[in-house]
Length: 306
Image (cartoon, rainbow, N blue to C red):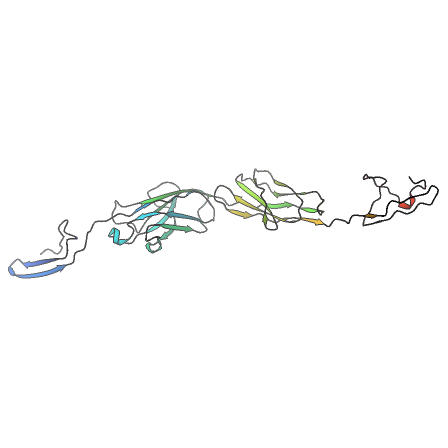
């Protein structure tokens, strides 16, 4: 007697049925077996589309991969299971379902999908991918039993090295509001031409940006007092930043008070010279309004009044 029965093609979904089993030697000996209708047995393959990520990622950095248009991910729609997604990266284009050697970036179960199973976003934190070019795929998890159903979504990106840390140089001491500037730069020579450097003073970012050229960097002269630091930013699109080592300090000494001079001083010919007086600190005396110091005390000026 057969031990396996198959529904006639197209009968699934037509309603519950009763299977009658009879004995070949006794027609009057029968067994009725009720069978619940299993419903339509066709498999609807999920689809993955929408969402892109083509760009740069810093080594050890964070990035996100998304799929914005998912269909038939739920068991009620595909008749097999609730599918999730696995994201895997390769060094080139492959069949992600059969190729080995890929790096799994993460897996999202069906419960982790968004918008009722129609969108997905994987946040990759502190990636361990080495520097290089990659092709990543979002694929169904688990793999469908139907061989013809192997949808995937592709991403292309490059992992670039993080900014190298250099030493901040420069700084000095000047007179408040009236002193020369001091150069601020980086040493040794940055060689990454796609790095931008931002000198910052006391936490306030300046607008100045330079790119590394292989020569020691000089950001120019700065005269405003404060502590200067430098932040390097990868401008390929990865936007990874790194604080440069150390800082440059510019200090400003208070200006000396403006001297107060008792003037004019009038002499009569033949009289004794009257001492010139002035209030202030570290004063130098001049014969006229030029910066030529006289190394004589005021009371030693010629009696003729010159």
